[in-house]
Amino acid sequence: MINGELSLSLKMEVQKMLESQIITDEKLPNVHPGEILKEDFLDAMNISAYRLAKEINVPETRISEIIHGKRSITADTAIRFSKFFGTTAEFWLNLQNLYDLEEENNNHSREFETIKMYVYA
Image (cartoon, rainbow, N blue to C red; front, side, top):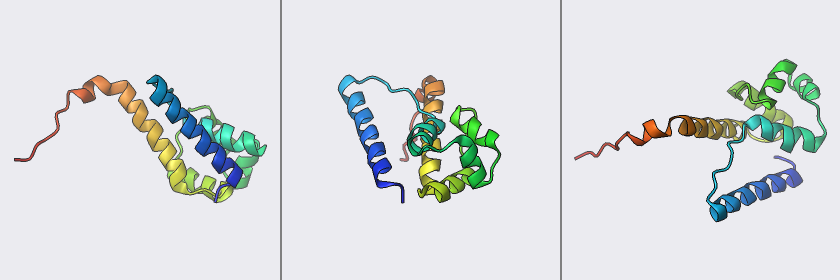
């Protein structure tokens, strides 16, 4: 399980973001999972990208590209992160899926709005 203090910090951050969005009705920027990895895990735990890469047996470039939003978190990487950080692989894949869905909605919203729901008669 994730560190209790870190878990509480993540929950508080998400709650604050949700409340901010509800109150102001502003669209929040889409956050890449790499930003969460860096800020809420690596920085919070004082772990370098190099050390993480070595500990989970992946090239440092993989971690660097994820942190900089240039690479997605794959199932393989999610499993490695889950083992190292004590989370679940689903946590990491869900972060990636939410990011990808938001990106698609942002980039193709007008096209998606033209799709009509099928009504079975």
